[in-house]
Image (cartoon, rainbow, N blue to C red):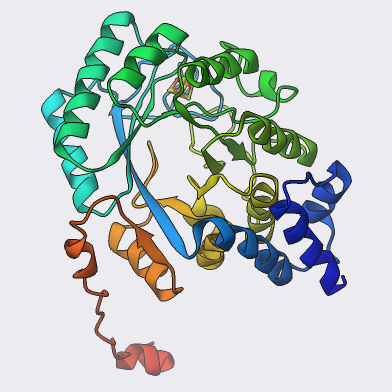
Length: 357
Ligand code: SF4
């Protein structure tokens, strides 16, 4: 493919024009489109709005399990047989202690996530109080993911100081009935619109690898562009045993990177997060995700483990990116040493394996 093709992708994205569906499809599937120039084209867009900075998020799974919904990808779903440690909403002290840990770890944003269809009015008041306390104690952004909410609830949370409300579209409207039967795509859209009506910034994204077609991924990317979401997590489906989608195949790093580039071209100003599944699907190519994406989780996901915080920080620094922080008190981050590992010497049984038998 000519160099001008890749340059045009950057130019179109930066000028606010929309790539055609045919071009989007090609980016995901055509072998003549090479990965490195594609990543560079997406990086030019990322650099324009976010320079070389990376925003780090930390998740607090504040309530695990007990969910009546049947999202087929989720270990907490009523339909899942996964052996998870279910617990009701954590006590305030625990949630506040984890907010402090998030701040100390260098997280830009603290994401409080809870299972369930949506919060009751009593739960909304409780969450509002918690959000007020976190915001008063730490210079950290707070994002909440609490299921379906209406305008009244969104207004109370906004008033309490919530920075963002997370509610992922997950997949296209056409594919939605294949991943959930207890609520609809429109229910999710209504929640996002309720948040937008009260002026709450929205975080909403996608899960790649749930049996969808490329056209579904393109539709979601364009829908999220239309919604002008501030934050866009791109998750790569983690096949957790016991969930209804557990048999889905592993994705290739090449495909995952192409998806991130596509989302960057279509949502040039959004904070794009390479979210759940980066370790599992990108494998040795994980660091390349930083060229289209400008955000990631520091150490793990809701029910699945991820990288350690020190490894994530080291990967970012090794690639020449910097960590975006909230406050002035970032010395603890700067002081963090690069992990030093001793060089281990091979033992004789490794050097001369036949001598052992
Ligand atoms: S994704 Fe949320 S609503 Fe769906 S089953 Fe899991 S916890 Fe429940």
